Image 1 (cartoon, rainbow, N blue to C red):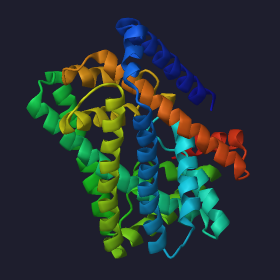
Image 2 (cartoon, rainbow, N blue to C red):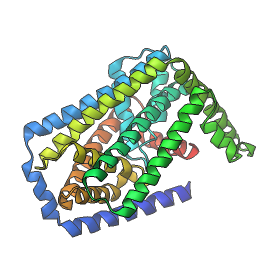
Image 3 (tube, one colour):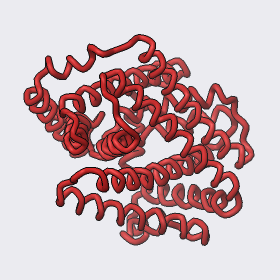
Length: 340
C-alpha cells in the first residue's frame, strides 16, 4: 500500500510539473483569453447535454439490469451513476474504482453484490470496447486529413491492433463460455498462493464471469441494444464537445472533434489522479496536429477538468447523503482497484 501511494504521489507530482511547464509555454493570459467567448446560454446547454449523456449511460445500465431480472428506479440508478463517476474522477488510471460503490448501493434493492458488480462490469466493457473502436476510427480519419508524425502513427497502429485483439479474444471466450479474466489469473499462477484474500478474489472473478457469460450467450438482443445505446451516447458526447469548443470560440468539424475526444480518452488511461498534466499535454498535441493553437487545447483541458471536478463533487455529496463515508469508500475503492 505504501509503494502504491508513493507511485501515485510521484506521478501526480510529475503531472503538476508538466502542467506548470505547459502553462508557462503558452501563457496564462493567452489560455484565459479563450474563455472570453463564453456565452451563458451555451454554458447551460453544455451542462444539459452532460446530464442527457449521463441519462443515456444510465439507460444502458438499466436495460442490462432488467435483462437479469432486476428493476431499480431509474432516478436512483442515475444518482448511483453520478456517484460512481465522482469516485472515478479521483482514481489514477482508466476511470474505474467507483463500481464497487455502485454495486454496494444496488444491494439496497436486494441485488447481491457480485450480481450487481457483474452488471456494472458488462456495462463498462461494452462502453470501453465501443469507445475504443470509435477512437480507432477517429484516429484513421484524422490520419487521412492531417500529417501525423511517423512515430505517433506507429504507436497508434500498435495500440489499435493490441486493443482490437484483446476485445476480439474477450468476446470470443465469453460467447464460447470460457473464462477470460480467470484464465489470465491462472496463467500467472496467482491461484497457487495461500493468501485467503487472493483465493477469495479468484472465486469472485469466476462468479462474475459466469454471470457475464450468461448475458453474452443468452441476452444477445440486450447486448446489441446496449451497443446501439453506446453509439447514441457518442452522439451526445459529440454535442458536448461541440458546445465546449464553441464556448472557447472555436469552430471545429466532425473529424477534429473525433480526434480531440480520442486524446481525452487516451489521457485518462495514465496512472495519474485526474490525468493531471497528461490531459493538457494530450490536448496540446491533438490541437497542434489539427493546426489549431495549442493554447486552445490547454483551455479545453481546463474546461473538461472543471466539468469533471464539478460532477465529482456532486457525486461525493450524493454519496455522503446516501449514508456512505466518503473517505472510507475511496480507500475501499483503491483496495478494489489493487485487487483487480
